[in-house]
Amino acid sequence: MKKAHLVALVVLCAAAVGAYATTVTLNSVEMDVVVRIDGKADFLESLDWQASGGEMHGFYLQGAAGGGFGDAVQTVFNMNQSYADLPGNVRVGLSIRDLGSGKYDVVLAGGRAFSGRAMYFLNYGGDLAGPGRIGWTKSTEFGELFYFDWAAEQWDYPMGHRTIRIELPIVVPGEKVEQEILTQAGFRTEPYLNKENSIDAYGSKGSDGKYYLTLRFHQQNLPASQTQRLQFYLNRAAIPMAAGVLTESTSAASGPG
Image (cartoon, rainbow, N blue to C red; front, side, top):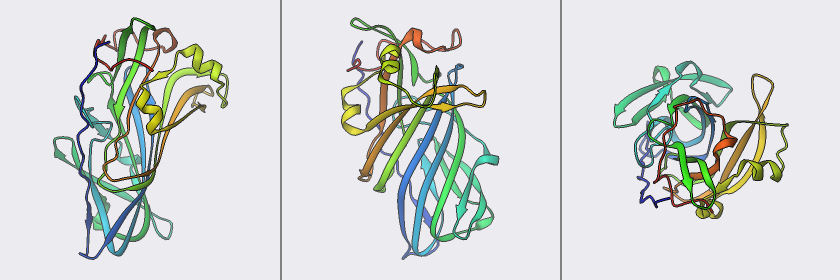
């Protein structure tokens, strides 16, 4: 494979606050990405915000669904499933405004604001196959492969942790996934991925009662603007994708490690 020279773009995400003295902290970000056989994915993102010394309304989000580099993934928000849980067990809907160029203004509906700690939940969909974030590629050493090359948005805040779970359309026996299953599927990563993340695998139970292979990538104590680009590979035969959905790429990445 040819080596791709891709640079992750720094994403600026600023909180809109009601007072100059307000201090805003992003404690953590967690994301579930469910890859579908049609090349699209469902995203559920939770953001743990804290505001002190004033009130916070929301934040700017750029790079949702993985727009950190290359061609952007178009995002479609599910507004009925996007909301915030505020102090006092109060749930409030969100107002999400498209500002163009992949940037969104995410605020509490009705002009609401909070002080203290709040969890924002974003539910959206995106096409991974269209911009080539997933596809087929070939390796002289490992043969025909499925590749996944995607990055979470970057934040200009440090955070305690960021966890991304990628659920793939690969049926596994149950919640516990043995190393043998990963070996049979040909799971490999770019070398840097193991240095920047702790990685484990398990089975997620779907609505059909089956368990699906889920890969968890975890980062701890992140500095501001820390990237989390995920590049991994599976044997082409291991993942059932709809015919004609994915394209062949010779520049997906530098090759699995």
